[in-house]
Structures are given as structure tokens and as C-alpha cells.
Amino acid sequence: MPLTNAEKQRRYREKRDSDPNRRAEFLARCKSKYQSDIGVGKRKRIIEMTPREQRKQRKEWRKIKSKQRKRKKSNHTILTPPSSPQPALEQIPPEHHSTRGRKRLMAKCYRDNDQLRLEIAKQKRLAHRLQMRLLRLKRKSSLNTPTGQDTPRSKARKLLRHWSTEKGEGSRAKRRLMKNQAKKALQFQYTLNAELMNKYRSKNKGKQALSQIIRGKLMRKYKIITEAVNEFRFTAGRQRQKKGSLSKRLTDRVCSFYERDDISRITPGIKDTVTKNGIKKQRRVMTESIEIIHERFILENTDIKISYPTFCRMRPFWVQPPKDSDRETCACKYHENMQFLVNSLHGLNCLPSKRLQEIVKMFACDINKMDCMYGRCMECKDVILQSETDSTINTEWFQWKTKKETRLINNQEKEVTLTVKEKVTDSIDCLIDTFSSEMQRFKVHTFNITNQFNHYRKMKENLKRK
Image (cartoon, rainbow, N blue to C red):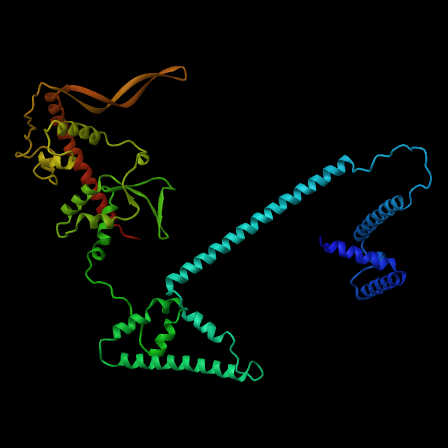
């Protein structure tokens, strides 16, 4: 088995110390080196050290001397055995570290192991990060350039990697080769530039193609569009925008319609915001479905023809459909009760639709006229819902009702007003009568809400800054 480096050094020292002359020469060299280090300032004498450095140096000396005594003692016991038998002496137990010292050493080992584990984990993370970076660079290079081809930057680097035309650096043939390669590359570039400039100045249809080349991906990548413009003496041009585009003309109009208070309501939470492309907006919740909002937009803007998909696409990102968590306040009692009645009648095939706006149009000549909505119109005030089904059949519907209850609060009885959702079971005749009586109140309520929102919107538009 071959010797280790430590064993070789140990044998060399033993062989050197066995010879007195070689030992003396070695000590003399050590002494001269020590004196030279002191003269240079590389080492200090004990009197030149600070008190802290003195304590540290004396501690090291004590350790070295202690090891030397132990080594000398062990060698003496091995090399000089007793010459005559002696009476058995009392066995001395081997020296062991104290309990405190062992614990201290174990704690140090644990700390070193933890430090090494952290270092290993850090190096693994670094290796993984570098590996992923290399993989991304390979993917990017494979996407941008064909397989086996160098990019323009790589070609320029290869050409200038060992560039030197000075005498004394490289052979004459090598310098001539590099000079010819550079000459050929520059000649090709200038020739191509002159040809492109002549084609651009001539009156043909190639100007647009040349302009597209100047705006190319590689020109933007290497940031040389400005140099190309200065060289060819023509602008890179800009991409023309389509004039008369429907989405461009209607964006502001549709956005303002979505932000109307009767179309969407703003959320009150300070953190209830939406951010997209660095634009932060307070979130708004639509009061109705987007199909109904689209129909309202078409009715109010008869001069515009916009499809439902386009209308959905032009919806601002901060105007969103409602969620269950958005219901932080009570809903309108008139609307909810009327919606319950309409749902029940639609299920009995008494009404053609569930939408309240369409149902109101059935019982009014014009929803924008006050007389029709308040029941003063002679043509529509007597419109009654008629049903062909058996009126004696019982049916069910829900209603929100206000009740008063007595509750014990702080050992005292108090009367509390509550709004409770109850199920009502009665005949179809009773359902139709309830619907007819509620319809008149609902028409007045709807007209008031629409009128209030319209006046409120006009006041906001006519505000003037002082």
C-alpha cells in the first residue's frame, strides 16, 4: 500500500533529525528566517505584541509544550522497559477529558456540522441556479438562431478575439489572415449599405421593405437602429394605426357607460382595488348581467352598432361581475320581492321572461314617461295580467317581510325590527293579485331610480372647477 503524504513527511523529518549535522543546519535556517521575518515586520517579538496577542501566543506555546512533554513521556515508557521484574504497581487510569471539556468538544462538532450543512446547501442552490441559467441561455439561443449558426455578435467576437496587427505578436501569416478577414467583412458591410441606399433612393416599391428591415428584431436587439438611420439617411418609420377603428372610437364611450352609477357601483373597501399593467383602479361591481347592460347600451345609443362580443371585450378591467363576497349591504327590497313574484309566474308560464325591465315594458307604454310609470296614462293604467292556468292551484313564492320581535338584551326585553325571508303558499289568483298591486309601486320605484341617476350623471358632467 503506498504511503500517504503525511507518512512521507514524517519519515523525512525522522531521517533529517537522526543526522546531527542536518539537524543543526535546519535549526540555523529556521533561526535566520525568524530573524529576517522580524526585520521585515512579518513577525513580532513577545514584547512588541499587544496584551491580547501576548495571551494568545503564550496559550499556543503552552499547548505545544504540553504535547511535547506527552510525546516525550510516551517515547520514554516505550523505549526504556524495566530491566528487572518489579512488584505490581497500582494501575493509573488513562487520562480522559473532563465532562465539561467533552461537552464543549461535542458542541463544537455539532456547530461545525451545521455550518457545513448550510454551506453545502448554499453551494447546491448556486449550482442549480447556474445550471438553470445555462439552460435558459441555450433555449434562447436555439430559438433566436438556427441550429449550428452563430449570432452576429458571436461572429464579431470571433473575428476580434485574437486581433493584433502589431509586429512581434503572432506570425506574419496569422496577422495577414486576420487583416484579410477584417477587410472582407468591412468591404461586405459598406457594399451592402451602398446597395440598400441606392435601392431606397430609386423610385420603386422597395422602400417599405427596407423600412421594415430597419425595424427588424435583430436591429432592436443590438440597438443599432439609430446607426442604421444615420447611415441610410432615412427614418425607420412607424407602424400606421388603422383610422376609423370601431374599438378606438368607442372605447371612451363604452368605458364611461360601464362606470355609470346605475350600471356599476364602486366598492367601499380601501384595499378592494385591481391592478393591471401598472394601472391601479378601485373595483366596481356590475348591478346587472352584462347581457342586460349591452341591451341598455344599444337602446340608449341608437346611432351605434356594436356586437355583444366587442362590448364584452371593451369592458374595463376594474368593472367586474358581482361575487358573493361583494354583498356587504342590503339589496333593494322592492326589486327582490318583485323578482320572486316574476320567477314564480314565469315558472307557471304566465310571463314570457324573468327580466324585470322587459316585464315593466309590458305594463307601460313608454318607460321614460312619467305619466305611464305613475299610472296616469289612460292607455296603460288598466293593463292586467291574465293567466290561462287553473287559478285554484296552490303555488309557492318567497317574500322579504319586516317583522318585530321581542328579545332579551342585557336582561331587558326590547322590541327589535327584522327583515325576514318567508315562503308564502297560496293560490295562483292571490299570486297574480299580489303581482298586480306590487307592479304599480315597482314602476314608480324604477322610474324614480332611473331619473335620479340621470340627473346625478348630468350634474357630474356639468361640474366646473374653480
